[in-house]
Length: 75
Image 1 (cartoon, rainbow, N blue to C red):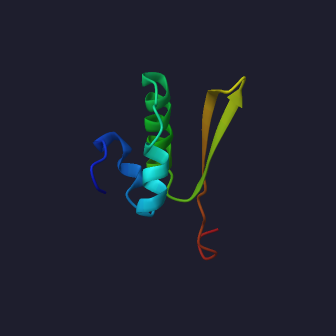
Image 2: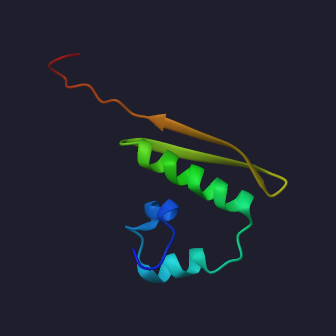
Image 3: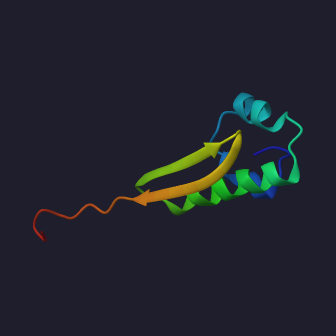
């Protein structure tokens, strides 16, 4: 990733044009903290989903769901 904060390393697989769009805004410290937390959640989930809950334009909750698939021979 080029010229971006180490804390936003989760964007490294995003095309450069989209990285520039995401990083072009004037982010407040709270917004940067939220983006970093979302990035940590994305990196933790190997198979599953990350849900972001927003209320009155503010992120109020981040949930992760991890999927564990069992081999048919072990189930």
